[in-house]
Length: 483
View 1 (cartoon, one colour):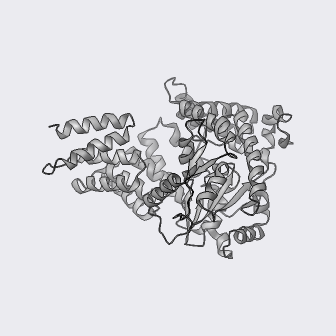
View 2 (spheres, rainbow, N blue to C red):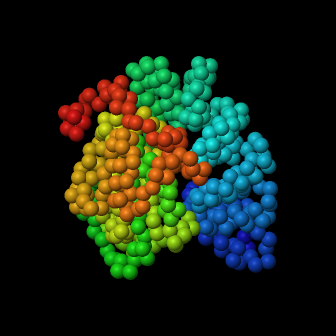
View 3 (cartoon, rainbow, N blue to C red):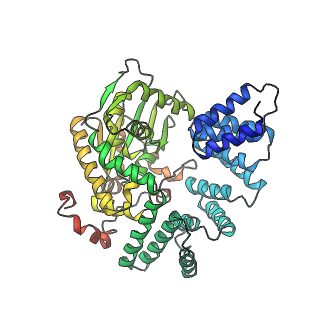
């Protein structure tokens, strides 16, 4: 009979190679056939890793809790449980478990960074800065920590720190992701000095390294955005129609458009007052399901029953209260999937956020958007944007009563009137309280806008991106909408 240690070693090998299903199966099978065996904490932890890899939150939490019963002072387990509480939206428990982990091991870098990010995302910027500074003490060569801290404290980077970062970046073994953060910081330093030409040069390097940091994944997803979904969005073939869908009761609001177009403001305005409304954030539910199904580019049919089952499983994993039928999802790429979404959620509405398109493109390019493969060059951004315009034109014509367009400029100039129109379209009751969203203590924002959104909405600055318009001059003929 295979002993427990051999099972753990085998499972660990499978986990390292992302064979989560096989790892899960051999671990569960061992437990099933070992009634009188004391299960080791490492085996339960491997099960957590397997279910975490499969994105099954309930089961991953279950096995972490078993680990905790064996050792209540395991700081790694406490940190990972905090991560799960955060995914569930339980901020109080997440903070408690992060702090418990930190108090058990004051030099545990991972939990220190997690605490810094946690406090940053809930708007406690002082606590966030304190933990980032602790992280820098422990890991003074980790450029990404300097990058995060500089977003909180605009005066953090002085000449001495810039020299230190420049020295770190001369290390040829530095990871591409770290190099990317370094060049974004150097670019910001030049922006402050209004050396825009050098800033643009650093931005190009930053985006290049960002793409290289996940090169194979980025190449694959870039092909999906350019050559797969752009050819399928208007010709999906549906099967297994849902006559008695369990999701029909939901009234989801999908915020769609380009990044940096004011989507976070809209999300916050919609969720700031009504406790019945649950924000799923950038769940990427539909993209995760559909893109995976279209890994074979010749396939264009969508099994609606299968999609519904996967969504129900996700809802169950995040403990979505059945009484919360009002949902907000800010996965901006959902404009590709409007047909699919309306098959699953017939009561769905779409808020399309927009802004001055030249400003929008430059804002995307200047932001470190590491997980979006198409954001790392002006050429790719323009190509994606061109497809976006074409697809939105198609859907706005097809579903004019389902899509509400909202301009960032107009929102900042006429916040009351525009927010009233927004609420009216969503069949929600408006009140002045929604405009005081920045006073909320439970406002969790994990997007690039989490610092700006902590204050009242400022008027749109029409001249902010004027120094960068040179980046677009070679594309004015190809893309008429740039004019």
